[in-house]
Length: 563
Ligand SMILES: [Ca+2]
Ligand SMILES: [Ca+2]
Image: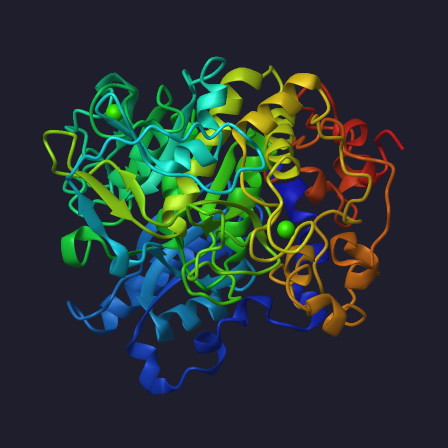
């Protein structure tokens, strides 16, 4: 039954029905010269519903044929990951062999795209160690309109200016982040630092040699210290000093283990964060290539699991997008200095959500056994954990039995109560402004920051244009894509301007999925978006109930909901 019901809709979803090879988008895949066929490619291969067995068989068959032709010389498909929720393999193989697979297995393949590089987002020119202590506790930092903050040395412990700027001390009488787990995907953590509460640390090793509890790069430890440096008489105090840190080390190569990783590594790490029960994922990293697979992962974590992902906007001093920050489901964090001015390096674009302190930020120094030899770094990397930690303060106090609503409320509260800077209202440098924990706390306490479901949604949800899933409403919402292409490339009977209200042309709906984020008993793939496609609602809408509802009851967009 399973195979039948998924197979029934293949015709509707098959991009070949449009006469186009949706999965031939990567330039090398369709245009590569013969000379490039021997180069290795690393790609996501998304299979069609339930087509994983067929795809794997085609890979195995090709391997066997190549081995027969060149015994001992052939290069096999190297499967790095299999992400069941995303129905995706991550595969390394010569590009020529990948093209042969795409041709042979085209009935099984929904999408092939490159697995892009992700790097740490710290400015190496402004790293310095700060061993000396100078007492300064003159600055009380209690007024919202205040814009200048200083590092204070209080009873032997630094209270970095950023901790004061984000209003953490005002919230501490009510929440210190206790019980909330923040997952830090980075270069590991120096677990032995006396400035961490060892019992609050956990992690996952990504190999037998890449241990979460070590950090030769110092970056992950610095970010973790901003979140959960112990409140004592040494080192620094973190924004949410009782929060738990779950460390996943994805950077291990290059000088000091401080080089790059892949989007697929990030997806794998984020799955470990989810499994560990994290409410927040902090990612002080990014890269320029967007990925449908990676975007889908963070959207799923947000909408289906109530996990807030926060990432660095980038240090390129340009308007370039950086991913994962620039996906709509991820909060993109810009950096400001101790005077609340934008950092010269901070990237600016229409995906920036919020700003936080990230210039000359003091935090824990990996390898320092005293806890007092603190390290000063600058970067949107340093801004990111400030926002993650503010979210932890709020999750500790305002979590309910409805995590999907909680995450919407908490993100909304941080954005609407941020201190506006730069151009009045939201702008591309600061986003909504500088995150302020006490403002957000008060707003949530009063009930006035509870987010109402959006009155306007993409219709149909999950729409993408005739060239395939890459060209979704999220894609059209970026830059000038709507203005340039919004009336072309219709699909599912609608153009982007008609389908995608987020980019200004869409349909205002008074009907929302209920509950938001519903999916059927077969898992998150079979969401309201999936049911909204083709004839899925009509065919399957009364079966596969989950969360006490069928698709027709939960998904108004496909005809069964609370219109
Ligand atoms: Ca401390
Ligand atoms: Ca502004």
